[in-house]
Every structure is written in C-alpha cells, then in structure tokens.
Length: 255
Image (cartoon, rainbow, N blue to C red; front, side, top):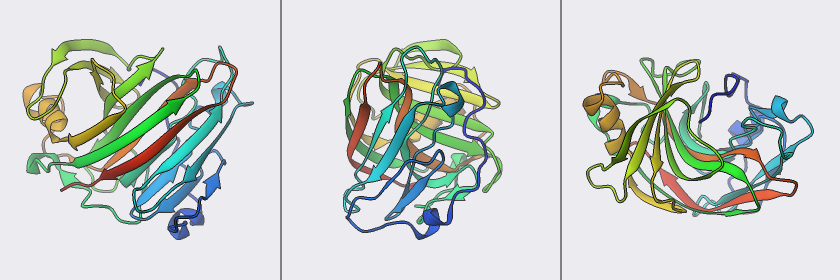
C-alpha cells in the first residue's frame, strides 16, 4: 500500500452491517463506508481515500452466499492520485467492527494458526490498482485501530507498496511462487509481500507469511494477535471509464 493519508478512518458502521443480507439475491451499497453482511463475512465499500477524488463513484454488491462471491464497480478520474478505496470482504475484526462470524479470530501469532484461505477473482477495465489480502495485528484482541498490517499482493498495475524493498524473490514453505518483501509505515508498520508472477487466484495458508515476519525478520511480536483476513482491491484510478472486480469465490478463517 503506497504512502497516503491515514487509511480507513474509524467510523461506526451502520446497523445494516449487523442485520445485513445473507440471501443469494444481489444487494448493493454505494455509501462511503457502507457494509453488507453475507453469511459469515462482511463486504465493505471502504472509500477511505475519497478526498483524493470527491467526484468519483463506487459500489459493492453481494453475490452468492454459498461461495461468498461479490463484486465492485467504480469510476475514479485519471490523474487524481492516491488510493481511493479498498472494496473488500473480510472475516474477523475491521476497525472496531466484526464480521457476523469471526471464524476463530483473533488468534495469537505464537499459536501459528494456519490461516487457511482461498480466492478467485477477475478484473475489468484499465485500472491502476493492486489486488491484495490485508491482515491486521494488535497486542489487544479488540483494539480501536491496529498496531501492524500485512498485505499479500497477488496482482497490481501502476502501484507499489508502502516503504522500501527489503528482500527479493523470497520463497516460503508450502507456498507456490516467490515474493518481494517491503517494509513501510502508515501510522503503524506495514509489511507487504508482492508475488513476482501475478495471479488471479490463491489457495493455501497465510501462516507462512506471518511466520516469516515474526520469526525470520523479527518485525512482528509473537505475543500479538492476528485480528482478521480480508481480500480486496486498492483502486487508484480507472482511466476515464468504469472498472470492476468480480470475486467468484472466497473463504478465510483462523484455523
């Protein structure tokens, strides 16, 4: 995640988050911090960088609760600069809110919980973006804001993570592919893994990334808690036309 104004202000989410739609019928929301419950998960619009392009537009829509599919469509002006949003789905904690089923989160880093997850998605449009997992960490099990953040980038175009490149071509046990590792800050430490060969799907465990941060690099305190798993798209611009992401399936839990 590039350096930008502090992300995701701590807003109270609407009652619709708690009551949400769990049926298979599509439900959409376009408010800045709008959120929709879908089964065990929460889908959020999260236009945290809207000030970078107040005239832009975005919505998120639920899909099938059976596969946790969802989609987002946006229009963000060319040359407006800065990340506008992170339309995404999460399980666990998110800036003081919780998904309908926390899925075993929070879980202590030292427990080496596997953090299994799966995602399959497709992009449409000429976007400047990154498609990434985003996990938060804290010494508290229910903080107001995180103390650390880990991103796992599966694909990107015209975007780079926050901070500096500290390792290239890292391979992790049980993981396909190799990863470039970045260290940055955005009010708290941000650690990013960028896949060297881009992909539109992932199936595996996120624990090797957490282990690498905690025990190989020593950047993450093992006594802290992993609070969530979320996946979405950080959007900078859509170059004069609508852009979109369609997530055909997603799952995540702590164990």
